[in-house]
Amino acid sequence: MRLTCLLLLSLIAPSSATAIVVRHDTDDAEYRVDAVTFPALVDLPGEGHGVLIDRQWVVTAAHTLPRHGELEQVAINGKPRPVARVVVHPGYRTPPDSLFEQAMATGEAVLILALIAAADDIALIELAEPVSDIAPVARYPDATEYGKVIQIVGKGATGTGAAGHDPKGPNRTTLRRAYNTVTSAHERWFCYVFDEPPQAQPLEGIGGNGDSGSPALIEVDGTWTLAGLASWKLLTGDVRTARPGRYGQVSCNVRLSHYRAWIDGVVSGRP
View 1 (cartoon, rainbow, N blue to C red):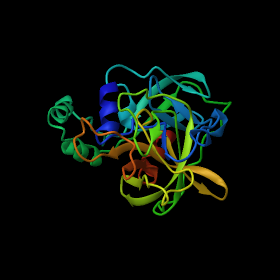
View 2: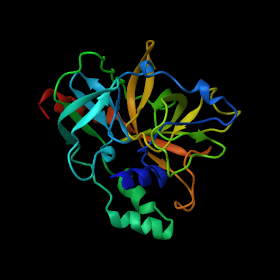
View 3: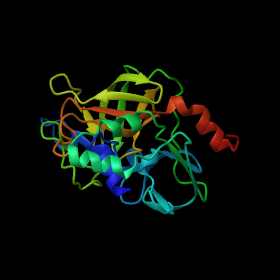
View 4: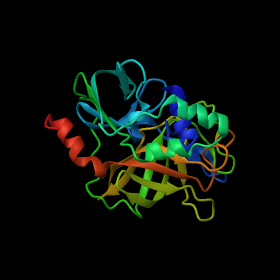
């Protein structure tokens, strides 16, 4: 799945998406944060993230999961947590290898984008034991994401908006957080644009390769709640040579408000 994740985030690019790509005119140290900033962040093996939303459940982007073989454990707060089972949304479709081969031969990834945009890129991971040392994150209660400021968190690839980041990695770095504003929200997705200064927010950023499933948070009454999961990013031009993370790129997140009933049904045992 590693190749798939890379292409999903660096072609059109589902963010196996993401540390954080930052402004070129702002010190990277201002984006780096300690793990205690968001302890409910879940590290999948190698790269990719999820978020703890219940004592025994993690939500993630489906394309982060191993393509072959089982997911045996994840890490939360630096500790390995055995996995009991994985529940993938029935509407998820894995892009076939032939589409990636075609994209790498021609530089055109529109068919992959069309497939991903029409799929339900979400999965739930049931842990073998409840987590007692970390509090789950509350989910954003509304479907009013449009125009809201979001906080994004991740450990994936990093760089600056002026140059983007190296699509070849590394895709797991230091925890960073940045901010942006939701510019569109419809059915499965909400998206945002990486604006160039001076239009950008003081700590504006965008996800990079390596953090698909990382959180997009919206503040409600002083608490940051989970509204979305990093999934894919729109690149223009030849996908073989494009660099992810440049100013002007659009990043799209799984819109959790669209999946509220499905999540509640699986977690409660009444899908």
